[in-house]
Image (tube, one colour):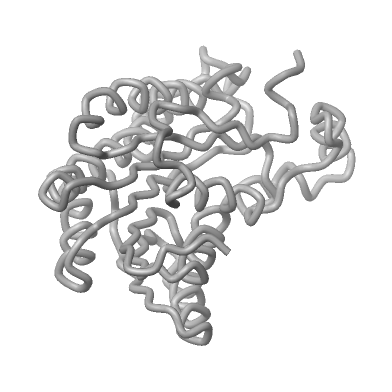
Amino acid sequence: MISLEGKVAVVTGGSRGIGAAAVKLFARAGARVVFSYYRRRDAALAVASDLQRQGGEGVAVRADLRRLADARRLIETAVDRFGRVDILVANAGIWPAEDIPIEKMSERDWDEMMATNLKSVYAVIRYAVPVMKRQGGGRIIPISSTAGQRGEAFHAHYAATKGAIISMVKGLSTELAPHNILVNCVAPGWVDTEMSLPVLKKPKLRRWVEAQIPLRRVATAEEIAGPILFLASDLATFMTGEIVNVNGGAVLVG
């Protein structure tokens, strides 16, 4: 088992899906975890209770990470409670299941996507970096997507945010390397979570999705959390600026 004993992790969007899986895996590895949620207080409390039953330490913080004040409060909560921030997983995001042709995409559609999927990543990184610099290093792991590399028809705004995250990782990795802050991202494909349920619950659509994946199935949230844990661990001390694709080979096919 990878050990994160003595480490403090902050995970955004930690109440469900990939975020919740990462929170639980980090706690099992020995990290103390602060995680954010936005609307689903019940789900966040369930995750926190699960950590407590496992003997772990976890703190759920309600935060609207489109607001810089909330992002700062999230990071400050980790520092106030545990004294440091060693790992930041910027996972919070949205994906609308309905197709939106670009000519029908409203300004509100676009702005909400940019704020939720991109501004939130900037916001938490902005406040975590000074903490990591003071303590002599850290790990930043934003979550991108296959869509950020291949694009996604009728979801151009989503793909734009995920592609921007990849560019941000490339820029920050060289900017922060002198401070021993490693910046890598994980890029999932289809994952069996609540966010993708509107598509995956329909047998015909699920079969179509799975046919596009060389492994012929979608991932579980835990299968994405594993590579996130790897990047946070001492097994990845000479990696920075990388995109770790976890998509069953889907990015390799047309």
